Amino acid sequence: MAQVKVFYEAEAELLTIYWQSPRKNQLCTEIGDGIIIIKDETSGQPIGIELLSYRPGDERFDAVSVEVGGFSNAQKALV
Image (cartoon, rainbow, N blue to C red; front, side):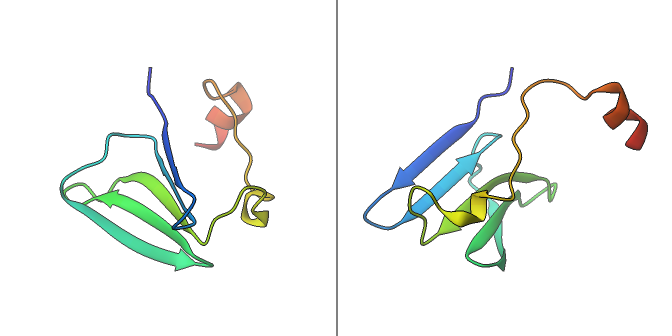
């Protein structure tokens, strides 16, 4: 089972979330509004996300839906 790692640095107002292990060679791309996608440099696969100027209750999470578990049949049909 995959393990999600969450790091919060209150003084720096930085939240980092990895859904794969951090890599020595990563590429970071800001996609807007202080949101950075972290990718594996070799494969280009997203492995994490970083939020700049983060504080608990951040409104950027209002549009995020988190689901735990496998794809439902309806979701599989879309893929």
